[in-house]
Length: 79
Picture 1 (spheres, rainbow, N blue to C red):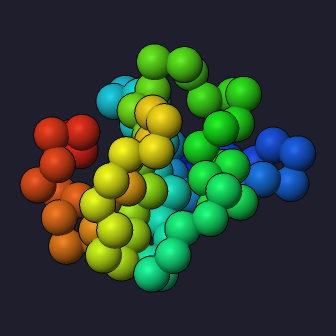
Picture 2 (tube, rainbow, N blue to C red):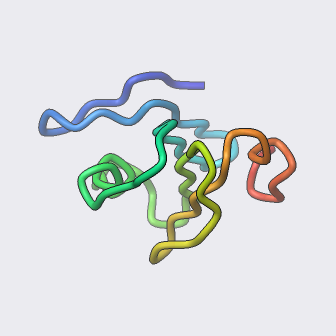
């Protein structure tokens, strides 16, 4: 597991290379385009699954899955 991946002052909270899984934690009610940017870093492989852990939002934006914290471990995306 890798923590705090940086590129151009953007930071990704977690990246699990063995699972090709990028995780950004945003425990709040509203997710903005700015919150999604760390999951769009060029260094993240195109095939990688992308998750934003939210407070209570469950939806998909482009190829990014927004999943509430209390459900994230039940997601088939999570190893």
